[in-house]
Length: 330
Length: 136
Ligand SMILES: Nc1ncnc2c1ncn2[C@@H]1O[C@H](COP(=O)(O)OP(=O)(O)O)[C@@H](O)[C@H]1O
Ligand SMILES: [Mg+2]
Image 1: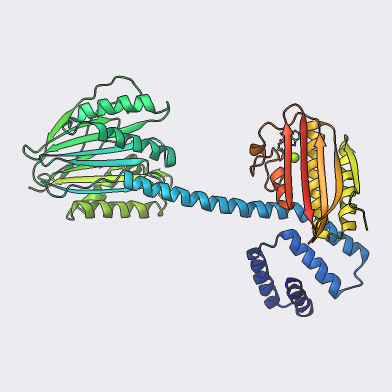
Image 2: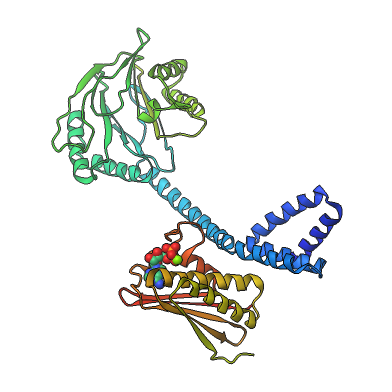
């Protein structure tokens, strides 16, 4: 019985003042917690044990111990509430896990691996649900790539992304013009998302026959071009307002010829806004890290770059992280 | 031993009446045979209910009743008032809703302390909270 155990421990301690008894007291309290014994009950056990050991306890002592018991009652209630809240939290967490898995299935995209491009992509959520999104379209002749970022994290951002995915799905299959796609998406977002929520997006489209890469940006984090011949990186300049702010927007469209070995590097601000301590990393650092792994395949590169920044941030991402690399193979 | 219908009420109007209600509840639960921890818990629950009457309804009453069934005996406490009532009971029964903010306080805390908790409230008419605890 709990009282007997406690009494023996107390008796032993009073006789020996032994550290071993204190160690066992610590074990006792852990077991009591497991058995859901609350703080006020421990005080009661102490009072009962003491009265058993010292039947002639002075009245003041007895009363003052009772006084302690009374002051512990609210701690007992708090303890129970804490347990209930912890259970609730656990339930919530597993519910969100289910939602996150569902999201992964819904937003699943196949990375094209049969064309002129070597493609690597990685997207990791800072919390359980991802507010970044990427998508590939492969119609043999062309490869389309979309990358988007909801300003904000977590569940609202993730819900918003599902909308983008479904809007894209409803567009006709032969629609591949980046400019037009962003224009249509802007209309969807503007109509359906509450003010104050923004989505940035980059849409690119690569023609496997003439090797032109056409692209438009809706306020998205500028990516990088890599020129294999000169071994240099260049910022992808593309102007355009973020999705959902204005009603009717026309986006500019740009084109770039890709030589063999050239790369298009796309990411979200979870990559550029990586921090070392309180300091944002510099753009050059991204370039340096990519250079270090440039001999690898596109998928290995994005994986390695992610690992680098994951470590840099002490394995605790502050924002969703998405990185895509496309490299012309032949 | 007490008879089954023993009932007594303490009117709540002044802050000091909260103390009288606690005292009555403690004496009563002691007579029924509750241990020190349960006595203290019952007193705390009464305290919360009486304080709510004093704060939100200005006046009301706390009534005590001895109860028994085939196996056990226990205590039943009814706190009633004709104050403004509570419009959204589900809300106030959520953990963490209380204005006092802290853990473990308020109506959800009382519910945990007791074996039975019931609340009736109508806006503009008043509130009645019934709690019960069985002796084990
Ligand atoms: N008897 C009552 N009459 C009217 N409103 C009440 C009464 N009891 C509680 N309430 C309302 O319910 C809320 C929650 O009560 P409670 O859980 O005791 O927490 P707290 O009193 O700390 O706010 C109170 O803030 C009050 O608005
Ligand atoms: Mg209260």
